[in-house]
Image (cartoon, rainbow, N blue to C red; front, side):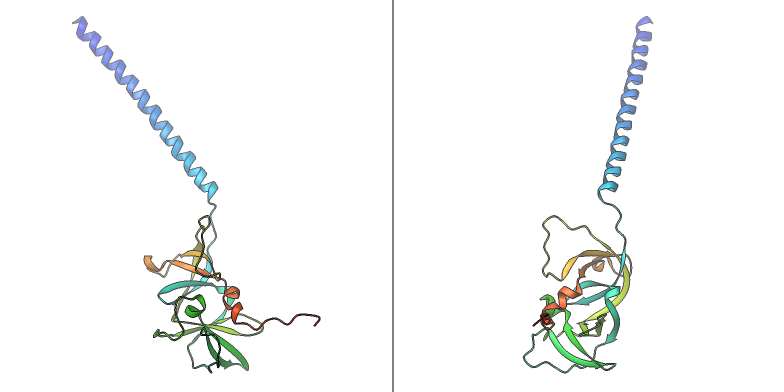
Length: 199
C-alpha cells in the first residue's frame, strides 16, 4: 500500500515537472516566432503600390508607370523609315505632331519587329518634344503593382527593365509578375543626339 502511494506521488511529481518543461518550451517557441516576425517587418518595410499600365509583347508582360503615358491608341499604319533601326517601325501624324513608333519587343531584344505577332495598341508616351509611341501586342489594363525586392547582384536582360512588380489584380497567377520599364532608357537609343550647347 505504501509502495503504491509512493509510486503515485512520484508519477504526479513527474507529470507536473513534464508540464512545466512543456510550458517553458511552448513559451520559448512563441517568443521566437514573435521576434522573427518583428525582424521580418523591420527588414522589409511595406512598399507602396504604384499604378502601371500592363502591356504584353513577345509572350511577356510589362508595367509602364501611369504618369509616363499620355494615352493608348489603336494600332495604325505608319510611314516606314528608310534604313532605320529594326525597332523603329515608322511615323504617323497626330494633332499636328509627328509621332515616332517603336516596337517594344524589338527595342528590348525579345522579338523582332518583323515577327508574325498581331499588334493591337500604341502606347503614346507623355513627352513635350519628340513624341514617341510604343507598339505592343496588347495594352491590358491599369492596375496597382507592388515592386518586388531585387536580389543582390541581380541583372536584367535590358537596361530599360528596372525591376519586377506583382500586379494586385486583373491578372492570372501566371501573369501577375511584371517587368517594370524605364521608358526614357528604352527610347534613348532611338532619339537624335542632343545638340551640344555653345557650339
